[in-house]
Length: 316
Ligand SMILES: [Fe+2]
Image (cartoon, rainbow, N blue to C red):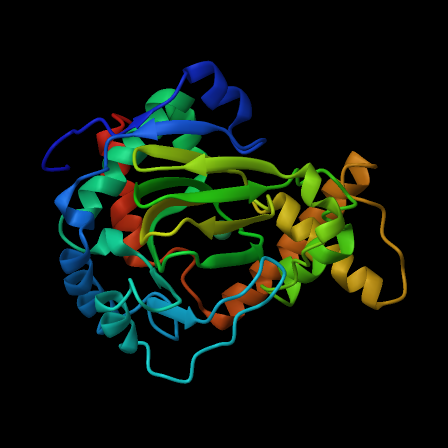
């Protein structure tokens, strides 16, 4: 159970539920000014996260890159070790850096923040949502003044909470095929995390939200977006989850292989029955592959967290 049951996320419940994982929307939160997110504390946090013995990701739970870029540019991957992120945070004001600390909910204090956010999300959405969720994560983004975060897609349902500094986020409608062609999504889900390609000719279609401390924006899965900081250091928390159901992901993956075999697949959604069969077939093949590799479906830390959150929501 969390140490305190602080109320963090505020949003009109009809907007929250109607647009959940469909369209972006704004909300407010109470984390601005919370000492857990002040820079000296984030240096300590980065030291812990960078030296984890058992990180979630093979490359570690810290990532960073440097340099001024525009929305359509992909930043260069750094040569320095991941621990260099700690000094980058100390000098964040004068660098051109973008730093990401993953799974901060594994550290004292931040776990309670994530769990309280999820409790608020479940209160707004209805607790049934919890049964569909595979795991949760809290990520911190620390970025230098004027830094741009490149145009990209994510596979999680996210809420981003602006805690320090100002930035604007440009989001696009994921249903707009000019902006997100099927082939791009197929590549993204199957082969290339960086497959999203910025199309400046459609920038006028962006939904732009100005974020300041205490405000937040919901980002549905696969909603393309890019961000630009104002002239100050930005600290942003991302609270997210992934669904058990990989229906759409598996459909795009199946279509990726069909296209490679020379068959032009139907656009997902055009033929629901065929879609369903295709996704089920792909899921079955994937399950067999996973059982042969002997990989756990959900990591133990995530199982523990799911259990705590279910208790918190009164479901166990
Ligand atoms: Fe993102």
